[in-house]
Length: 421
Image (cartoon, rainbow, N blue to C red; front, side, top):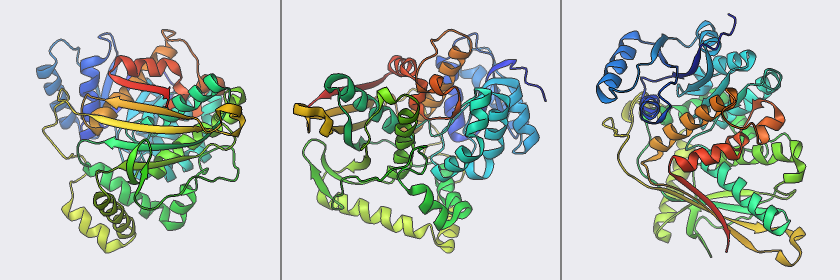
């Protein structure tokens, strides 16, 4: 099917929990002249969402509806009809590959909210070069997983390079405040990743530089399960460390490869933790994560969990209000490497704060703002700059969208900063 790009943006999965949050964000914040569509497998559900939009956003022109299943024909239809596709349909390792392939081949920009880094590795191996040739920006993990970690790492490394003319040795990243629980889709993605890739595939993708185009010996500071960081406080390992590190180290590798003058440093490493109030809370968190990590490897455990947890398509709060307040807060400390001369060992604090809701509200904001930024670049309304423009397309990371994207996030209420400690 030839690409016509008649629509600016298509949101696939709009009838699900996360997709509907993204749809509401579009209704509230996107330009009124946006030509967009909501897509899903059920026309009845799409029609019901149109009624909700008409009721809650009477000044917003209704989007089109596109009935699309999970097959290759539907993927091609979505990719060919729009300049940018945003998808929340997971587990991505089961349902997302055909759409990535279609967008890469059509030259259609793509954004998703996955945290399934073994699947992202598979997509890089299969479709990165095709997307480079067609100019498609394919940006997975552009949400709660793993945009905050990627952006803060970029800001800290940039600050060190610009202010000290030096590299970053290591960066310690920590989640300081979190609102809300996990949706059914998030949990199902966790289970499906294990089932699709197995323990060996997961172990391979978990290697620190698995997604990076550049390989090298890798070392990072190691700590006890609970320890006290002089700046970040009492910390314990966190479940997002692997997906976030995968994205951050891909950004490191892409920068090393394509813009070496803006290198983060040959020795750069990333570690992630969660701040806790006490050693007891930290130990309990560490044990819980360990038990869950072992439990998901056992088939009966997954079967039981699927019966008792929230089901895909539903969230921790079905009465989700996009206007409600909440707070998410991350902090990071980067250390100047040996090439800093008298500045060696100095530390830089990076911060990321969002007061607009929980993790799912942030996800809706991220994927829509990324899509709108891509659309502005496509239409010439935003300067084409950044790592992604240097590469020209491919399987990229959030920071590949450049400083223009960060300015959009600032306008959307996200505060990102880096300063010397």
